[in-house]
Amino acid sequence: MRVAYLTTDEVNEELARQMAQECGLTLCPLAPKDDPPDGAYDAVLYDWDSWPTEGRREALAAMLAGPLPHAVALHGYHLEDDQAEALRRHTVAVYGRLQPRVFWFLRRAVRALRAAKDLGGTPPNDSATGERDGAA
Image (cartoon, rainbow, N blue to C red; front, side):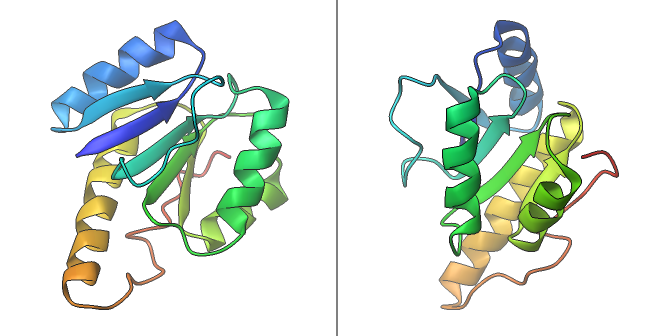
């Protein structure tokens, strides 16, 4: 499973690579100059605090625009409570910090999305695709 990781933080990138590998995921770091993640990835993870402000606005609008084609999570402290809640309602998992459970969530969410597609349906909008950790 390929996870696009949108970050500019080299320390977080290395930490994320290790965590992803432990979960059996392949991390694919993307920088602001790269094209936005598309169907080439099973999941997308945003390092919200390191991502440029303009990129955050665009990403937020895209995540809230409609159904997401892949599992999505973000970690960061610079997200307003109302934004975090809106993202959760759109099946985006929001975490305060980068931690192993982010990658375990993405792995489960990708599997749930694949299973739903195999059955010709859509995934449920519940804790399997909209996890929260209590810190926005």
